[in-house]
Image 1: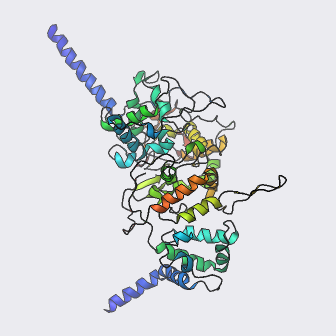
Image 2 (image 1 turned 45 degrees about the vertical axis):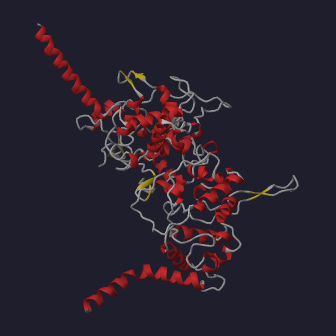
Image 3 (image 1 turned 60 degrees about the horizontal axis):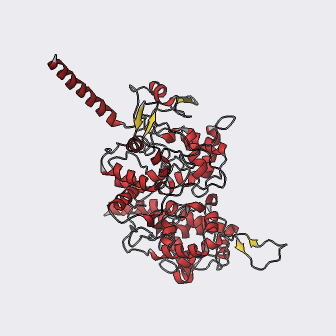
Length: 239
Length: 310
């Protein structure tokens, strides 16, 4: 009995820094950061961390911790512009960012309901997702975001099961904003509000997609749904 | 006398069989390319392969679809023939349709082709088998088996309307000219770390989802071997300049493409399966000395390149 107690104590001592981060992070999700301006995450990203799709608040559950950390730092610096998130990211401490990112990455990762094995139809959202439009140098989304858009590594976040409204707003955020009816002397476009894509991989893709394509591909990934089965790393995930 | 000749025939056919058997291991010894693509005149469009919707729903259509599936998920669907973690689509982007990414519509109509170098006529099936031996570091599927048949049907279909035996613009990788002052592995490392690490990883290991690779390994045991066309710096430079980073092709300069191609191809990978008597120098002389620009069998910073990796 004593032996078990010692082992347990030892295990806790070893694991504490890892579990500690996530546990602290769970608390930040519910209560917010030490600074009251760092509002509780759950008010927009929901208690389960799956967001509020119909309001365009994204899912954070299961996203890689380095990805979430990077986004929060980019909100802070303004590399990613967003009226709601920028003040929150500025109010969170570096330590809190680490903790909350760890907590969300510990939550369940999205798993696609029915892996897609059918051939997409030209011009559909599924087509852009699985085939792209190479004549405009648009690779299929799944080439980098993984089969069914489940996400790859720390840099390519999952698109599957994400809020379509969110995906659409992000694709538009990467575009220069066209300003209608400006005098000819002034520039007719504003810089993109999101400029934090590694190696500028997203900017030209977003800029080359049409409005219709953006809507369709966002709907497609949003519609892939989330399986109740946990994500299984030992499975085949075909292109 | 009659008896004698009968024996001779038997002996000859035995020898012939032995020869066929030896050649069976590697169907296409010579990986050098047949004529390169002519330059595309500005304003002229690349050949455009048929659309998916044009494919008939019949036995032929089914075989083409099977070929397409093998083309994109080669490792998963032909695990006995792929010895590493590569898929056809890794080097032939957009399912083998993209110009300057060695599209199938540029390759298929060029075969069969006689090549002085190995003094024989190579069929398209043999060319595909060559990919399995070298780029896939595996065992080529039989020429009359379903895998080669399906990949051939897919290539044939993509070539619908393309002229035969005529090198089309966009064929191959349209290699940029070598830098005037030569390529530089150290400069290539800088390009690699800035542009390539995010997908291919610090050690060229690639990235997976589940058990399948999404971003292919560029060196090491799971990548193409020392006999693959991509081990040539000129070939890799062409692929990289036109196609990398994904969706941002033709943004790297020709020099950057050569440098980063050299950095990738200075790293160890599986041995050339044509290895002559276990000797790197003999293999270099026979297969690499005259094969474009490559580092096999040379010494870089005091290290012999081409030792292979298991």
